[in-house]
Length: 203
Image (cartoon, rainbow, N blue to C red; front, side, top):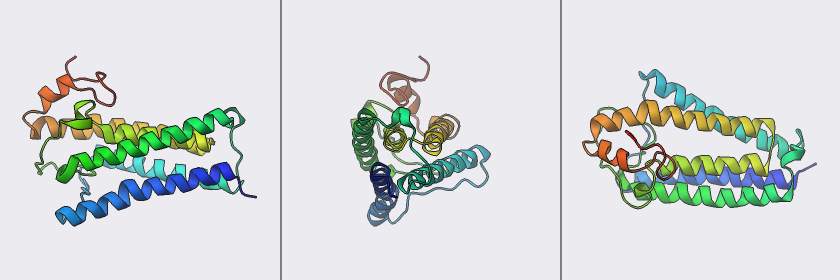
């Protein structure tokens, strides 16, 4: 028996992954000749955050797939129509924010950090409101999974993604940016980390 609500969540989930990672990587490679992926084999913290990102994607995908085919039941508490509509709104907002922020980064877009690499610091547009709009969009889009197909696995996937984002930003990216980008510290004093005005460095 197929659960239509969870099946829709699965389709949206897979479409988001393809757009945010596959399509974006293809566009970036066409424009720059580079995939944008950076692997840090010798950075333990980066490996941990990468593993958490991967685990979050796997847990979310497995959870929504099992729910779509009624192997596991949806949580009744979040099975109401209001939660479903909220999930759709969050998906649209998160997807739009992720893709727009990725596009705004242009040639500077990366997944991961290469400590020896220097790219341009993007501070305009969405990046004038928050320093990490891609991650804000990713978490927003992930939250929709917990509302469209609320199960233990999809809830766990959202939590793991939030932890992965916090570790990646605070322990990997910000130390790199502080050293690599002369104007980053001033920028970080003025712009919030994930939401406007919240998480500004030194304030």
